[in-house]
Image 1 (cartoon, one colour):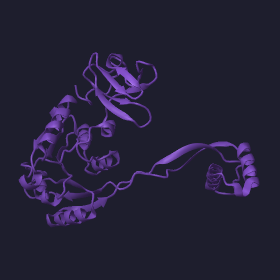
Image 2 (cartoon, rainbow, N blue to C red; image 1 turned 90 degrees about the vertical axis):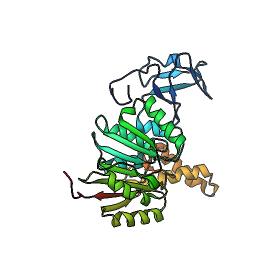
Image 3 (spheres, one colour; image 1 turned 135 degrees about the horizontal axis):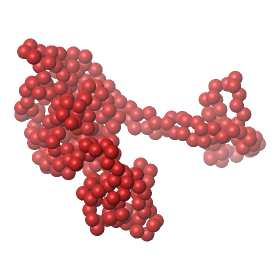
Image 4 (cartoon, helix red, strand yellow; image 1 turned 120 degrees about the horizontal axis):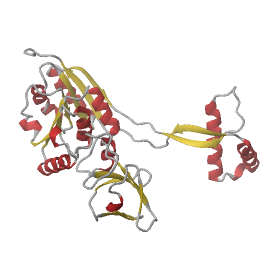
Length: 322
């Protein structure tokens, strides 16, 4: 059974790959086996205590000092905890790729290279049950490992893994793909082969590159080969913190941000131990104590930065299209 075939599956069974949440943002995956166990710094967790349990269950360690939650695998969770054989795409970029390539059930996609399979799992979920993914990886060991993972996850019917150098050898496909994704050091060397792989009725192409110089050469090649609507995106995630703060008496004549700024400033001043103005601190403390508790949000001080550039382009219908 594949990961996505039975959305109503509620319990973890022997042989299943499950995701364990070990607290906070810490995740890992295990394959459930009878009499096996998982161990972390908080204790030992027996698989027998997980088999047959509903997803979302809390399982305690042998010593009762630790716990984990059992979660059903999704592409998003797999991206967080998979074994990194290469640098990977994360959910922010993946969602942009799936949307901009206009993928849907039944779509045929060509991907190069496979890498750690992070994007591949999201592509398969989107195009199944009638679509297919052709993924190429020039590194033989990585290609073999990717195929093993797809088989263990029950996804082999939706994907073909090929060990090949797409830049030098091409894809060997003609008039079959609705979309092509390239994650290569020199994507411009694979674009001619991508044109052959795309259906004559037209299709979309995406190239992921970490450097703007790569983007420039890719765009030049896309223009040369007749691609239109060439656009490059950099997807950034903006996180917000949510806290309960005492903001004092609300004054509707001033913007709400004023109170948030003052409250955060007051907290920082108290943390820093500013001895220059003790009376002012005491006054502010009294105001804060008498204030009203409110939930407020503000941007995180540190947020993930640039991962790479996503270049999208459209190949129009060509002669001979049916």
